[in-house]
Length: 328
Image 1 (spheres, one colour):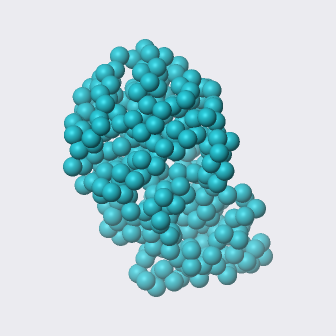
Image 2 (spheres, rainbow, N blue to C red):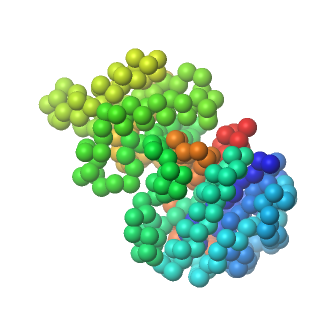
Image 3 (cartoon, rainbow, N blue to C red):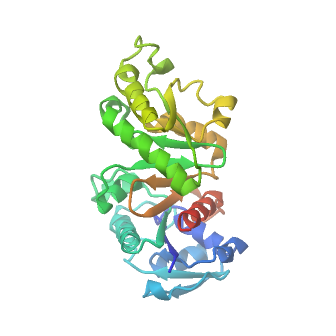
């Protein structure tokens, strides 16, 4: 049976708020397959009260018995207890709860290929402070838990798609983490991911350079000449439609943007500011190279409005919609 599991992320943030508000919309019933929230019912009930939302909560102890969604009703699976349900206030004691929910959802998706995982926003600093010292992000954690060798973080909207050659590492470590063999694998994964997950039969991929002006023929760095260009040529020889390295300061002009299915950026903040400027609140994150379907919102925990104001729901709606597409 096809289904979606939602791991809401940081309890002090808007991850819980998002799903509660979404359950009041017609979109909730239009999902057509069961969506089960992995959460402590005490947290769900208290946050619904904070938001003055009347929601019926139904516990699902056997996921195979989950039903299609009904407006105003949420099915939940309780994997762990949440020590602190206070909105807007981080508590490191909640770290184990967040990880328990995530681990349960990942393992369920591994065991059942018809289960997709949708994740809400996490607070990495709180997880580290709570004892998970090596936690870098959802992508890296899912890679570890699924034993995947190579993974790619791809953020996508209707206007632009961006994959990352490196993820959550300091800028000082980016250059040494870009290798020809790794970049070849990333290009291959993006090529296959665009075909399989986004139904793009012949993807056009554009690879950004690392240095200003893409190194300017080696005058501002050698990474383009020694690593990026050879990787692009190797993939092009395999029949992949890929160009690069392109200078990041001109790669997103209107004409190139319209002629590109996905960009590959060398580091996190090289292209994501462009994506979020064009599509904030409408983009999603999906993980390539893992044996599960995983999509996510493109924003953070928004602690300042948790339990108070209605957050933007567009990104979560898109994440669920994309999970449905990948479950087809």
